[in-house]
Length: 462
Image 1 (cartoon, rainbow, N blue to C red):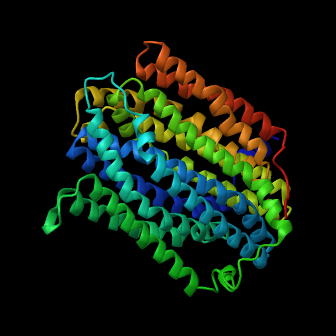
Image 2: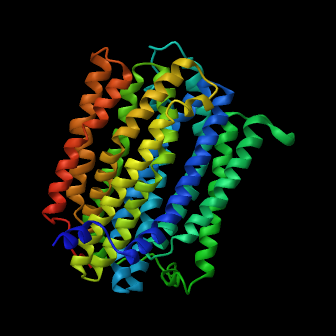
């Protein structure tokens, strides 16, 4: 009996071999991306605190666009994973076309919003209240960075369509390889263009943006060319552009299941931007400290974050093949693995929390804030890992309205009001405010556990 209970939460060697095969490419790609992001951050920070803060604010805004793309593609991705489990290539081809049409609409909308309201959005993060930082300079650098970054939205959106479909059909290595090449290009160009090395002009934040844009075109080109020249490994691409027809019934079904995900990702990413805006009322030093904290913590959180992709593929495939017991066992095993990895990486991050801020050429005030925030993130990692896997499990069965309530509704109803009240209407230290806001998610853990135990997510949709 005890062995049976343990096997529910801990898989055999074959299970972990499959899990690692899916997760490692994602971990490596995201880990390298975040490592380069850290190096970029340090390089921009070496130019000045205002430059670093301006870039951080714009990246927070672009994060909303990126998550909208992710959320929009995720709705169709649920169907792709289950079509793959069913071995229905034509179904995968239809979901691919749906993704193309969707990202085209999101791209036009996103560019329009940033061109019209970009400077106003940046201004919402700029407040007095700390010893460090010049508000006018931060706004100027942020606007310069945004104008260049807009050129990279199209290749980002297009490669996400291809890469997500490849991952959902079991091809995780190619997106990783393309990502690694893009990372190397980005890192090298950052060094050349930010500081003006080897005869290149000194471009500062605009150089950082240009390097990112070029690397996105490189990544997009690699993924598109590989897919079209390897039809035997990506059969869905054969005939994909003969028309953009998507069967009406499938399109309606994807919209029904996927629209909550798109709305959720928009509201969640906008909510995270709003949370940062709440904290930013304490001054520019807090904005800079949050930037350092998020850049470093993202590097440490890649293991449990990759479990979302593993859940989507493994659980989605089992559900598509009507293997209900296997889907349920996989869910719990991945959940345990994610929580344990968060505990391990959190312990390392906590121990090094005072060291990482020393990498930045900034003030002692900002370093102190960043170190405190890193300790909070390290301590709360297991909560976020649990909620992350819970979310993706609920999503894998198409229960997208439940995921909407579980994720973004909770953020806007609970987390943001708490952050707003504590940041604006109290004098509590910012690290304590951040601690309370992070651990409010413990309520969400209980909700996630109940939903998983009740098996409301077990649902075959193709």
